[in-house]
Image 1 (cartoon, rainbow, N blue to C red):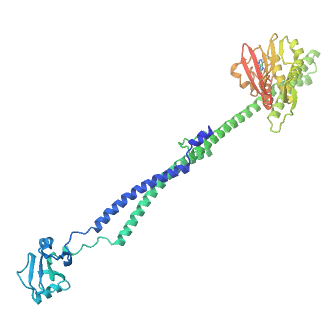
Image 2: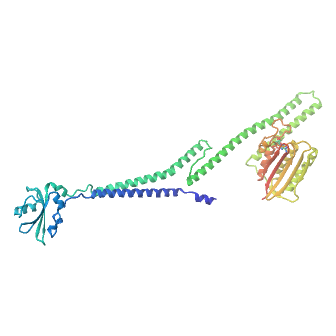
Image 3: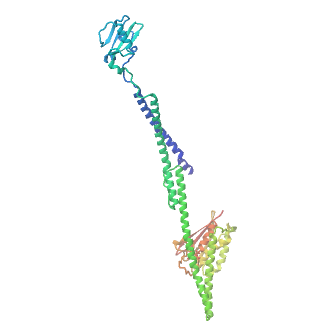
Length: 470
Ligand code: ADP
């Protein structure tokens, strides 16, 4: 079960790893898009516009008739092929004149054109000499068409492009970092807030606080631990309130129960002291009342003393190895005369064999006596009492059953609480303290045993006591 749970648990580190992978994928995706955008930008920045080649050597061909200057012609340019005598042996394009021969001045203009723009010419000239075929290629480009031949400048310098790319990458990194920290912090902040809220409420005294958090990682474990802690504190608080209530009720009950016999003792003793003309019968009657009330007060104080002693943390039982069957037979034997005297019928079923348990004889005897005495005390003559003991697996069971007036079902549990009496009238004729069964239960539980009541008002009461045989 625990292994299964363990496997199902996802750790925070797994969550962080998952987030990391997720943000890595997102970053890669964004980076790919960025790279794509950068490539497009770069392509745009470095793509040259179409421009006319301003270098005659580019046009040069040995067979000058094959030279293609169509683009140049579109812009109003032309070309001349001049031989070593200065004769124009071939030309193309819209020439400004119909010269058949280049003069020295013409050559001077043509050659200087690259460096010097001072001639009164509408053209810029580019020249290239073909050594093999011995001719000069002259290209004339109209001055007003000069701009297309100037290579367009790059829109951005390489350094700026690098800075731009770095900034963009940094931005992408920043975005992915934000995504990662946001998703990861959400995994921490939400449960932390819920836990903090819970802690605050518990520290403010609201012990019913429970944390509802969907999580099966370490925060889930923390939530479970917190809820268990809050549950325990709540239970402890409930017990504290209950025990405080019980303490108050105890004081009230004790004072109430002691008040009656003591007032009676006080009243009759006063009468005896002050009245000198009392008959001997009256004196005997008053003394008997005083004696009975003293016995009652004494019994109450004794029960109270035993009860308090059992509640004390320092109280320790003295255990000895005892044969429980023999032990029960001894207790029963004590009660036979009283059972006979009160007209009870009885039946005892105690095994012959020995069953040994570690018990505190003195106190356990007190526990059994309480139960048997109650049967005799509260039930009419003719009631039958059955005491049965037997071993069942590793348990030793004792059943004490009578068919008397019984105990109401609703008191099944409460009857073991201090001062619980079926006859709620405080002036109970029986004179019981209501502590007997509380003391019995305490003693049995201190022997690691349990006691339960099976009751039905018309069918009497049955107490079942279990002891573990170790
Ligand atoms: P008490 O000191 O008053 O006898 P107990 O705790 O021993 O206190 O018993 C609680 C109450 O349970 C008694 O007051 C009595 O009303 C009822 N009771 C206990 N045992 C029996 C019994 N065998 N038959 C009928 N009533 C009983």
